[in-house]
Amino acid sequence: MALLEVTDLKVSFPTPDGPVQAVRGMTFQVERGRTLGIVGESGSGKSVSTQTLMGLTRGAEVSGSALLEGRELIGMPEGELRRLRGAQISMIFQDPLSSLHPLYTVGWQIIELIRIHEPATTKAQARKLAIEQLAMVGIPQPEQRVDDYPHQFSGGMRQRAMIAMALALNPKLIIADEPTTALDATVQAQILDLMARSRREFDTALIMITHDLGVIADMADEVLVMYAGKPVERAGRRDVYYRPHHPYTVGLLESVPSATGAKGRLKPVPGQPPSLLNPPGGCPFHPRCPYVMARCRVDVPPLMGDGHQSACWLPLDLEGVGPEVARRRTEASS
Image: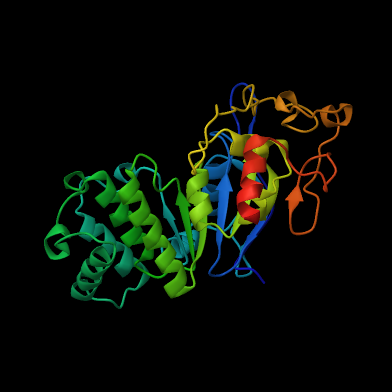
């Protein structure tokens, strides 16, 4: 059994204009010690899907199943969820300044987390552990900085403090939601290394949510591509990068700069993402797809294939085409 098994997850939010169908049938698994990368444009449902697992989408209409070691998370009472958060599942948010309480020191917040989940731990023991956690994530002079407030930390240090809090109790699953956005390249590399080290040392499973395909290339074992609230491709990292099938995945790859410095204009994905108030019928990508067929406008393609899955009516043995994809395949075979 996988550590986390999510089946047909659907999340919608009621609005005066009708329900916003943020997640429209999401299925995936995460094994212990493995990293699942979830990518897609803004508004594709990446963050909502994982926040729902944590019970953080209040007011939403949720259906489907999410089993953590056989325990159902969907519909779990708030008290039980609260005992799981931090101890079994931790989340690293995109903006740590909005996640850390501004009126309490960073150390107090880590100490409080530890003592809530481990009541037998004394305050002195929890403080010592908090200092050790801050040192582990590279905070200088942790004995002094443990008494600083979040506004006294730089952006990179606040993100490190969030990671220290997330790792304090060695959770089985960490969800990282755009953890390196707005950080410089050096700090980004250090934070990714911290999360990779935790995965290796504690056999922690990691869900990495990002729009940065470079981060996914460094971290993920498996990649799930989302579009308009639905998974459209799921495969191992190398298959997604070098042998993509879904036209949307191909478009994402062709719209990012080449790491090798190859010349040529970037090729953006044409059009705009659909409204989730009134998503298009058939394949959600068909209004923007260069390979659209009559069937695409009517029938919703399921994820098809073994191992490498794609929600596209194109034949599964027909891989994505394009100059950028062709270059990546050449690199992979060399």
